[in-house]
Amino acid sequence: MTHPNEDYYGWTQETLEKLRQGRLSEVNIDDLIEELEDMAKSERRELRNRLAVLLAHLLKWQYQPDRKGKSWRLTIEEQRYQIGMLLKSNPTLEPMLNKTLNEAYPSAKRLVAKETDLEVRDFPADCQWPVEQALDAEFYPD
Image (cartoon, rainbow, N blue to C red):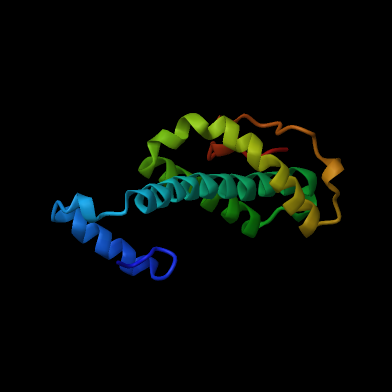
């Protein structure tokens, strides 16, 4: 039997075949549970990362108005689009949006500090935009 840490793809194919054939007693349930948990964490992690990139670019847009440009605008648009697609395919993530946005905000501040002359302390302690505003296609901070 293939182990997921040795050949992940092979393990998934083997496990899928056993499930399709109804050979449930041959499926390592502990490995399957662990992988499903990891998949769920991965989707939430992607949401948090995309929100961090979106918030970072909104912060740059607001705090460096003289440097606003097409690249930042397109990054904002792309993150909003990808977040929308992620939520469409994972609607149960939507109730977690506010919490995930607040978790992403410290990373966003660090990203901006890393890419600019600004410091983390230059930004508000808490995210100033509600999630609906941050995801609004028409919103760009002044």
